[in-house]
Image (cartoon, rainbow, N blue to C red):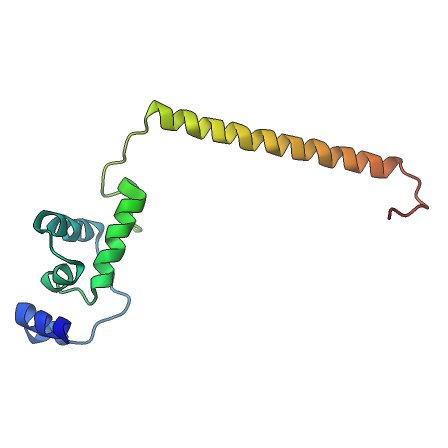
Length: 132
C-alpha cells in the first residue's frame, strides 16, 4: 500500500496505470538509477518510487548484477556493447586465467589418451569374449 501511495504522490495518477511486464530499460537508465541510489543512500523502495519503477526488486536486481559482473553488467542487447568501460585485467588475473586454461587442456589431453588406450585395447581383445 505504501508503494502505491508513494508512486501517486511522486508521479500522479499515471504511475498507477497498468504496465507491461516486459518493459525494457536502457542500460544508461539503469546506471543512472544506481548512481542516484549510491549518491543519496536511498533504499531500493525509495529509489523505485523516485524513478517510477514498478518494483524495488528491479533496483535490487540491477544492483546485484552490477556488483556481480562489474563493467559487463549492462551489455546493450541491441548493440552488443557495454555501457560501462571494461575493467582492465591485472597481470595476476591474466596469469590465473592462463593457468586455468592450461589445467583444462591437460585434463582434456589425459582424457583423450585414456580413451584412445581403451579403444585400442577393445580392438585387440578377442571378439568372442565378453567383459564382466
